[in-house]
Length: 301
Ligand SMILES: Cc1ncc(COP(=O)(O)O)c(C=O)c1O
Image (tube, rainbow, N blue to C red; front, side, top):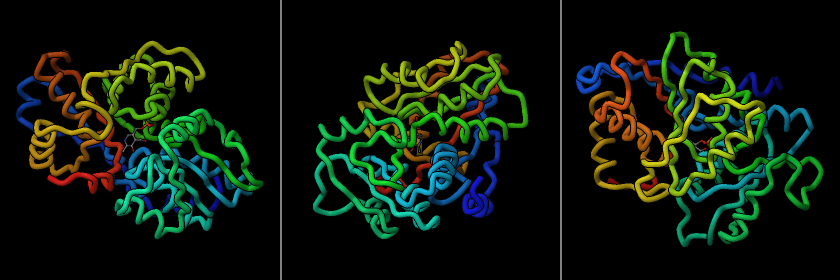
């Protein structure tokens, strides 16, 4: 790996595996654990580092001087990319979905402060950008510019996500992860023995397309995974009082901070499924905390 990335990774904190202590879980005889990837780094947290690591290595290997990608006004991916670019001394550019807001979001302000060039694109143009999946796919790329698809969802992301799986040092029955593009889920499926069931929880509505997207990232056919589409709460980044109440309850019980876009929805789903006796008693479930806590700034409670 590039020495600058090794140096950066040395500043990271461990992602611990912790058992949740909640009488409700005891009642249903379920062991629920969390893999705390949110602890890795305050900004390049959760699945961001996992997904970016080997793409950044590739970009540095190619001698790239600019990283370009796309995301929304609260994008965890672009936020992490802008910061990492600054640390690595690389220029960054982000295509932002939708018109420029009158007041920039705190996420966009951070990105700008870290030197990212922001380019606001219409929702239609944004959708077109989604077709560019590989590092040199973006039309009109200049030499030394490196393109990362939405959410950093490319095959190289799988290698970094595998490291998360390899850190888990106990046996388990089910591993759960929230899904946006599905790249983190694909990385997990690719790294885990077929004896474990893997559950993805879609953060967006009408996400049945995810199954094909995840399968397309996988080098071989696997059957031990599924994507639950039922807990989107009306759509991406949509919330409800029920979800917020749950997050407040969970944070108070466990002292683990949640955001309502990804990990908050997944845990709501897990608790709901546990109380509906979906899992067998004594099953051990590990849920991955995929970080993104900066995105909380888009919500007021
Ligand atoms: C905090 C957080 N969790 C989960 C996800 C979903 O990851 P993926 O797009 O790999 O499915 C994202 C988006 O990248 C994210 O920012």
